[in-house]
Length: 327
Image 1 (cartoon, rainbow, N blue to C red):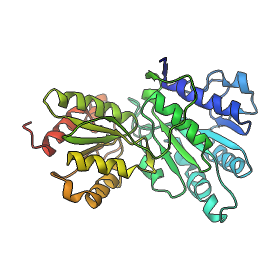
Image 2: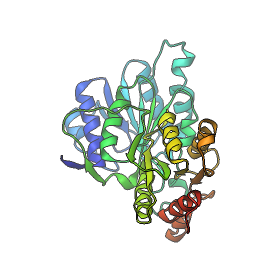
Image 3: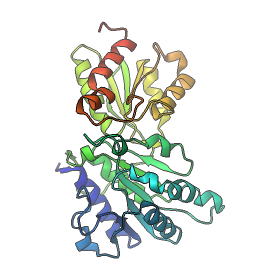
Image 4: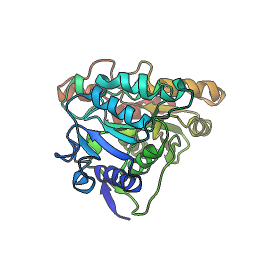
């Protein structure tokens, strides 16, 4: 099977859906003339023209609002934020307009819109450009929140998001746009809300999503060298969450470690820990451990970034703690 980059998988999903449905259009900063800040939309202006690949001013609240209005009137906008850090400028349109439109109209209006772009740390970008808001958006009824970890999932989930009648937050990673992975040439769509067990194991369940899956894979490899078999689950989406797959795994392994890049308070990992103790308490042989970012604005210095973010060593240490293995 061919291997393509994460950005190419996203571009294929966008282009295929725009060819399939003339109502779909892309709008955001630098998406057209510059081919996208991360070259996701490279060449799309030439194919679809300026009416469907639209450059905007630096005004997230404005073009997010235009997108919501367009969705309410029958179009299918894809709104690109150059980073989800900038989505805070537009959060009123996302939460108070897009997410609530169907409910507040008594089902008379739907809002088929996708807000997409990079999230989280991407190196030495400091505290205002390195934040994770997956749990913020997942806390909002009316939104779906998707966080793919590889090119295959990125394409299949983005196509699903574009076809979804509800607003979808689609969070990528600047550090993953160049990642390569196998992606079929034939069309496929992945179900939003269905987790993927990417590695079978019997001693502990490792759960993550997005680029933190790289930490989960690497930790599982290190643990395997010491005879600890980790079952690794990629959530793929954090609203809805596939609780059934998660709970079934914990009932088998009796232990869980969650890896998440966001801050610890009121995080996705907090929700997962609650659900597991609620639905699988009698199966737990150790407390759930969460590996998150330190509870501080992310620093600029590389050494402090490394100290703040989840890493393989922290995950391995946590697994040894819950499995009562010698450190």
